[in-house]
Length: 178
Image 1 (cartoon, one colour):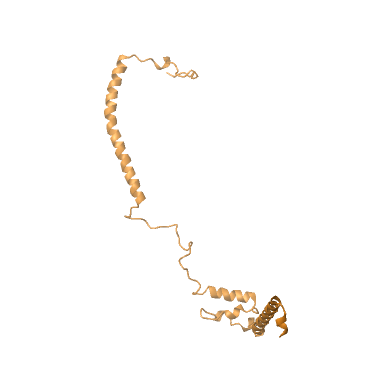
Image 2 (cartoon, rainbow, N blue to C red):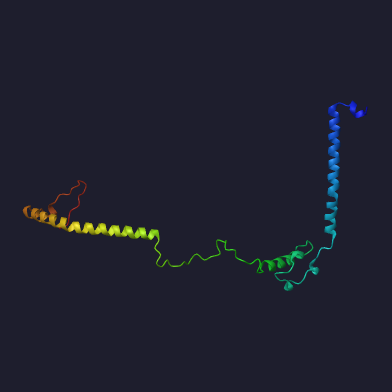
């Protein structure tokens, strides 16, 4: 019998698990080591600096601007290059989705177009005018009849002069001018 067989089952599982985890960890570290070395090698490569960059005047829309993103390129040169890139025709397009791109202070006249609100207002105005005309036609007939009745009543009664009328309110002590 092997010595592992004499150990209890739990101990054998633990040792097997530990050995599996250790093997897995070793393999993972070993697989990452080339990536780390490769990244360090890329950083040590010659990265372009300010002197290696082409003059800004020679750059156009089809030029490669990736060299200006190198960490060895000075910040002012990088900013000028990116400014030139973003002022180019490829990046200087209005997409039409910008809310403030249009001028909304002026608008086209409606012309012959009548909106629903305008129709409603015109109908309400016509209705009010019709009601006013009906009232105006009905009032002269009523006013003529009431005028005849009031003339009859005023002739039979002797009205008191305005100066002799008593105020209707006890607190009202004003005199009515004659």
